[in-house]
Image 1: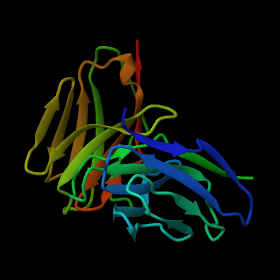
Image 2 (image 1 turned 135 degrees about the vertical axis):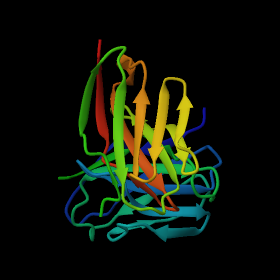
Image 3 (image 1 turned 90 degrees about the horizontal axis):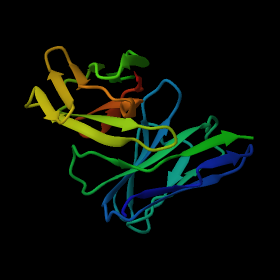
Image 4 (image 1 turned 120 degrees about the vertical axis):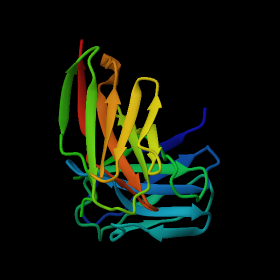
Length: 114
Length: 109
């Protein structure tokens, strides 16, 4: 049963600490995305990757970093430079790099500050 | 800058009636529009889409209407069922995808 797995479901970060959110897909999709959702706002794009070993900044990349060493994995690191990290984070993927495709989403990770 | 807006945070309808969810956008370069549905503790799932060359797309109980001159799209659910209770996001794409903040639909038995 193919899909996107995000872990952990809940994550707590201490001040000054980096944390990494996992995103794994077994859909054989080329492109992967990270979004952030805050209350009352739409999803905002943090980073996206259209192919292995390549990624691009989205609208709110500051304080975040990503890697794409394998096609199926696109981890997101929330660094200590991100001063307001409390949010719901969603990972998504699309089959190809072609624009205008529905995205498949994971179930999200909720990050909170201790 | 919110290019996609869903002005109604919530909507409540009776089972069997029509649900109409609305979405407005500002960028005339958007050429592909989608609706996603989200249940609690789950990620959004794709529901229905429409290209800018069309003004209507239907899939079972779900119909999306696009009014390009008004930069407005709507999702109609007929008849509404309790299982339709969820948060509905509209999205628009002209390259990067932009999402609205969502409308929580409650369908009462």
